[in-house]
Length: 426
Image 1 (cartoon, rainbow, N blue to C red):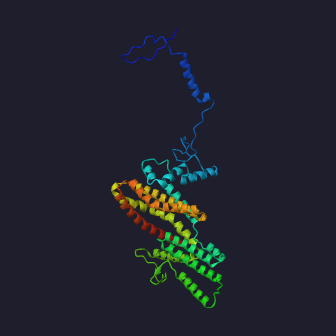
Image 2 (image 1 turned 30 degrees about the horizontal axis):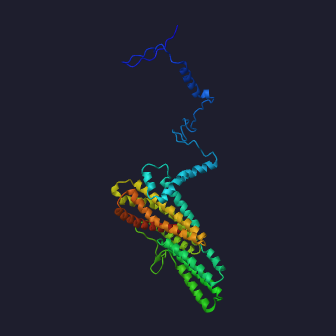
Image 3 (image 1 turned 30 degrees about the vertical axis):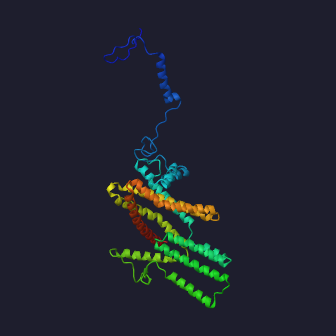
């Protein structure tokens, strides 16, 4: 009996085309449809289907690198160490192609990264927290390697000097470097006093070497004068104290630390720490690099502590914009990351300038670049504040000055406190 093809009925109100029931679909259409189904199946392709991976902890089917049920990652620690190290640095610092897309705008486009973050375009750049931590640690690590406050090299050079002119040139050069370092740390009293002691020792050694070259024997009257001068200098150095009281040094036995409102145990602990800091500061006279490590090592922790205070000042200044505190914290992170990057570039340029000081053109280019970077820092921060908060120039300038003065005071206090605590634990 001949079969007859019956298509689905047409829509209501429409007649079925004539001849529809008498014409079944072409045979090639059925063959093609069946072939497509067979070729798409794993069995037809010759590769049997793999069972889905399961979590080793709870047995749940895995849909990604982490189990959605218990949170255990697929990767464990039992793998190649290079892979673990790569994951560590990627998690901590996010050192990938994003770093190149981030550093350029950070140094040249004020407020651009912050505006992009607020606009929701975050994944293409390094996160503000990672960016700040990476640049802060890198910058002050390079600064520690680049700067040397130890005068042992100066001692050997001084002993090799063959003329009075060489001694005077070496003395003046060393004193100029110490004066520059003292100017950079002028807000920190402990740093300033430590560098003064280093200058005193440089002058003493230069005077002794000049006397040797001139053939003077330090005996008799000249020896007495020199001994008196050295003993006076040594007395000044020995009498130097971190905490002064009237015309003399602080005596912890007679005048222990006594802050009203604090328990006796806390005041006693502060007295002990002050004595340690006082003694260690005398030690840094012979080993200035120990003080350098304490001073530079204190800066990253100081910045981390002061970041929330910087954001708090911004929140107060822009209170009527009704922004979240975290928005101001993002501004603080990006601005401090820029300052760290600028300081890193200045340090590297200064090193190049010192290494190639005999080449006049390179020395001049580095000096100009350092000057432009130092000039760019406040301009950058002002333009960033103007772009992010969008107020007029007058209001932005006033708030910028208030922010700068307030934060400078906090930075000086924070650095001083951290250096003193570092000296106590030296």
